[in-house]
Structure formats: structure tokens, C-alpha cells
Image 1 (cartoon, helix red, strand yellow):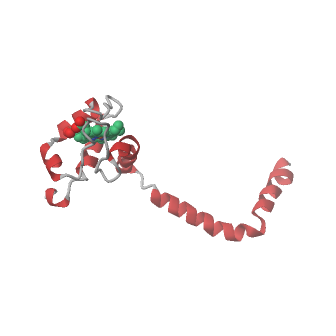
Image 2 (spheres, rainbow, N blue to C red):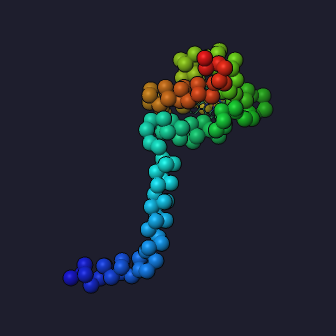
Image 3 (cartoon, helix red, strand yellow):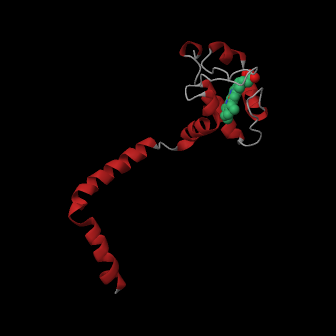
Length: 130
Ligand code: HEC
């Protein structure tokens, strides 16, 4: 049988005497990996923010630089910014763009859009959150 004569001895040999050491290491790697991937809607939004917004707005939400003559990305950690904008206004800018901020149009579903607005709100400084 192919099973007995072919495949199994190969697997047996490749794990061989070292499998005792590799086993616990693999288990550790799997555990570490699963801790890094918490799953759920929030972490998806974190990923979306990081890949679609982070390059301009920064992981810390403080923004960066803009081309000459353009407004820089807003500082989401600024209390005045947070106070002056409604959730609807934030969502509108994400959809329609503003200055050198690109319009994301219908790229995001309504729930993703809400998630992104909440994500921006999480940059609000602590004394403003009360
Ligand atoms: C190419 C760089 C760039 C990317 C990518 C980007 N932004 Fe911006 N964003 C800007 C700039 C520049 C401004 C400031 C625009 C202005 O005030 O003229 C801004 C402003 C904003 C504002 C504030 C608008 C206001 O009311 O003044 C929000 C909210 C925002 N961005 C959210 C996001 C989100 C969410 C994403 C990802 C989905 C994103 N941005 C991706 C550059 C970017």
C-alpha cells in the first residue's frame, strides 16, 4: 500500500528524533499567533485603518505632512477637532474626501464607515471623553 510504504516512513523520518523539541516550539508559535489575531469587528477596523488611513494619519492618529499649500492630515488627538465634528461630518469626509484627503466613496460599507468613525473617536484625548 502506498500509505504504508511511501508516505508514512517519510513523515516518520522527517520528524524523527528531533520532534520532541519541535513539538513544544510549534505549540508556542501557534499560541503566540492566535494572541496576535484577536478576531472580531474591532480588529478588522484596526487593520482597515492601518492599511487605508495610517500612512497619512499615522497609527497614533496625529497626522503627518501634506503637499505644499495643502492642509496636513488632521490631528485626531486634538480635543478641538473632536469637539467641532459630528460623526456624520467625519463619515462624509471619509466618503467624499477633503483637500488632499482622498474620497473613499463606496469602498466601505456603512458598518465599516461607522467603525472608522468610532476608531477616530478613540483618539479623543481622555479629558474630552467624559
Ligand atoms: C493620502 C493621505 C490620506 C489618506 C490615505 C487618508 N487621509 Fe484623512 N485626511 C488627509 C488630509 C490631508 C486631511 C485634511 C484635509 C483638509 O482639511 O483639507 C484629512 C482629513 C481627515 C479627516 C478630518 C476631516 C475634517 O472634518 O476636517 C478625517 C475624519 C479623515 N481624514 C479620516 C480618514 C480616514 C478614516 C481614512 C482612511 C479610510 C483617511 N482619512 C485616509 C489625508 C489622508
